[in-house]
Structure formats: structure tokens, C-alpha cells
Picture 1: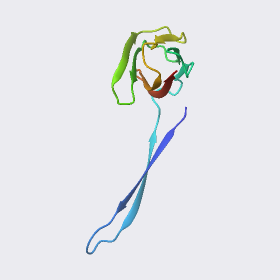
Picture 2: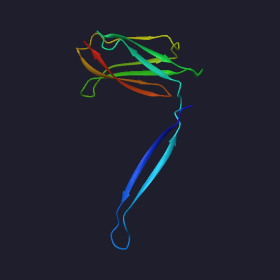
Picture 3: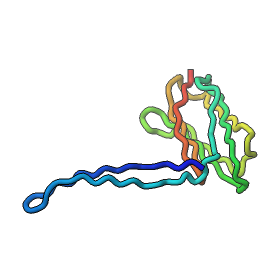
Picture 4: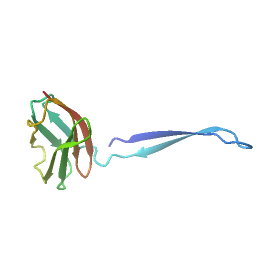
Length: 119
């Protein structure tokens, strides 16, 4: 299992009898589900693309898929309940204009943000 480390460095400065100093904190974070991966293809696309989820946990999941334009507006939203794992989810966004969009795929275990290009 992979372990992620986050380092936070704090600089504090006091006035008067206290001096300045630097404190470094290292926090260990364990991913909730390190074996979960999301692949989006083809990218760039003409509007129809596949989302593949490789999942090793056996519990049923729900998937929320949102596409945002460059202004942060949701232009497509879809919720999929208990999909077949390792089977691509086909998403049709061909009604959207040619542009770059932000794709957010969310399950109970992960949050994936990717840029998709519709040309």
C-alpha cells in the first residue's frame, strides 16, 4: 500500500521577548483505496468517450460524473448506480461545443479531476 506524506512548514514571528522560528510538521496519509484507477479515452474526443474504472474492492459503488465548462458551470451531470466494474461507461457529450472541459468523477473512495478536449 502506498503512503502519502504531507509536509507543512510554519513560520512564526513574535514581538517582544519571543523570537522567530520555523516548525515543520509531517503528516502521514493513507489513501482510502489505492487500487482504484479511472481512465478516460479517447481524449481528445468528438464528444463520445469512455470512462473505465478498475476497482479491486467488492462493495457496490455509485459514480457521479460532472462536466464543467471553463466558467465552472455544470454542462453535463450523470449518476450511475452500481455499474459493472471494469466495463467502460460510455458518456455522450457530443452536444457540447468544441472546447476544453473539466471532468469530475466521484465515488465514495475517490475524486478524480481531468481535462477533456472536445474537438
